Image 1 (cartoon, one colour):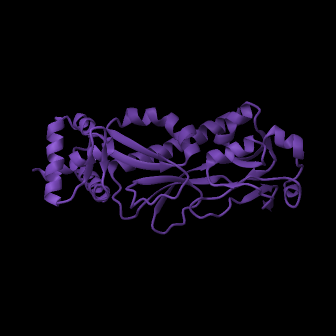
Image 2: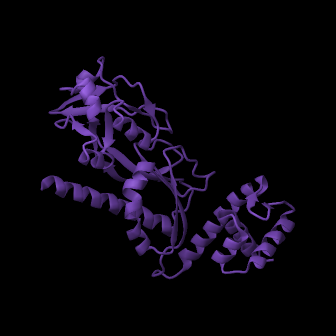
Image 3: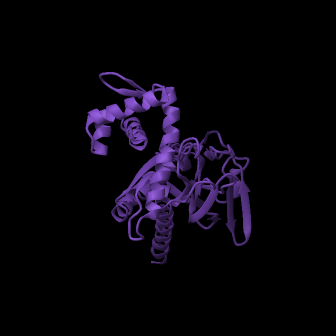
Length: 309
């Protein structure tokens, strides 16, 4: 038994949930894949998979073994790639976790250009605002807004996300249009709160104009930790929002949100890619980071020209 082939076959069965699909992606027969997994189980003296006529489920031991094997296979792939010719394109699987609104509104619409440039990279996207354990979940990197304070991560700043203040027409019809940010404290106005899921701290609200800054807490009857839920709450008229412009633009164009305090400035949200310091920055991760930096720079240039015109 070739241990590498056996581990690769097992990992592919777990990922596809099928011996047949695993065999197709590996360009092997189903019988060969089955035999390799059986030989691996015999060598380890552990049952890795539960098989029925309809589906394949990984056992608890199999799940633990898969986490280690998948990392080993990625490292081996990186080692081979690093020794290949300089002209070879990066290849292999890249696991990335990104916030849901950023994924649907910015990253995924731009992905065809990345795939055309790097056709041999298989991107596995985790889309969430939750805390991700990069080591235990075998994630190569995360894209996150705000400061990265976790000392176990290396963070690279890839851009800044402009913010604006917004409210739904139904909210303004009920509560009125505030003339000054200070009206939001100790009044009948409401702000939808956003809590960073990794720290549980509420997102601060600070506006500046002509050298004067106003920090707000406001009354927050609803606090959420997901970007899509945050936007939905604002559209429902629950309270005012402090939104990244890319999240607000479509709703503003449809008249579902109205910009407020337009003569005040909000500090942009810094955007980072973070990864473990002990993880080798593979060629595929390096080109993804560089591509993300260029993507954000291009959006910033486009925004500048649109404002100038």
